[in-house]
Image (cartoon, rainbow, N blue to C red; front, top):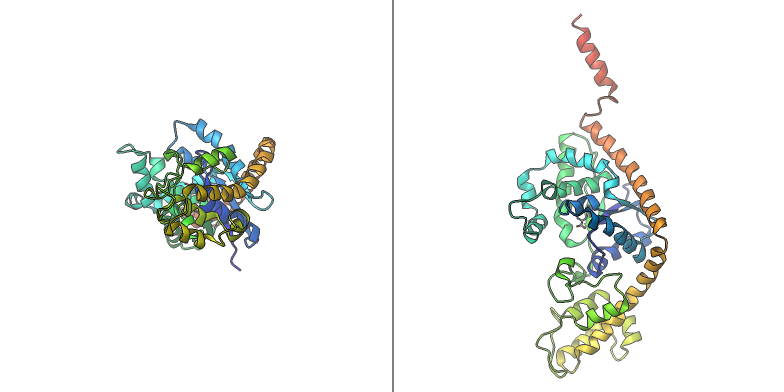
Length: 365
Ligand code: TRP
């Protein structure tokens, strides 16, 4: 029977925020709790983070522990999954080097996520080779574990597609079904695919300064929610308001349940009723913001509490990462051995090869 193997991860360039939470973290915990998987690996992608932070390893180093704390605080459980650090599994770099032969430069240049990142970072003509080729390294991350499921945000779809191409190309070229084609796992709630920032801009992103972090204290969350972008034409309470592109409603779509209404806003049964009132007019922004704040607090409070526990056990967190890295390494070694065998670069293990060369030179005598 085919196995369900999950691999996913994040670049450690800062703390994780609500966009990460609804886009992927929540999905990972759901899979973990469903128990319907055989192996699950969650990777802190420090090597990938270095591809555009080569001169700032300190930032990456400081962010690893933050991401690990965020993982643990949302409920990823080291007894059920392996949490590891990418750079500590050197087999991944080796695989990357071999896969590089199966990918053209033109193909890398077409990757839409890489394209937009290049623009954003204003690399112009000084794109680091490591950065340009990180989709290949990401294919190594996924295939080293023979992962078939990859829970990620939509911006990662081009990476999964490129991984699938590499898998097909490898298995074809070396005539052996060694690697497994992965599939992305996306959240099924549309608004969770790309949660906008608190300023209403397309994406929650650290560089835009529009994030609510999982580790933000309550007062900080309140401040951010109360200053959130809504409908700029909804000026007086009586004015009819728009719920489309209204960040508060987008967040409510992503987070609130009918139980939240019963608890914090019982005059409405559900979000549809609240939206209808807002659209008709007579519902002020402050009221919906306060409600959103309560909803977010309900989500964030247990996360904050769990974080506190682990913040007091940093050594244990490092132990978790070390154990996870050792486990990940074992698995990656196994795949690398199969890859080398398929590529016929396992010279010392290949007794037939040695024998045939003995015979070749025997004949001359
Ligand atoms: N590219 C991902 C990010 O930007 C991190 C990552 C690296 C990853 N390797 C991966 C995600 C493999 C999923 C699978 O956060």
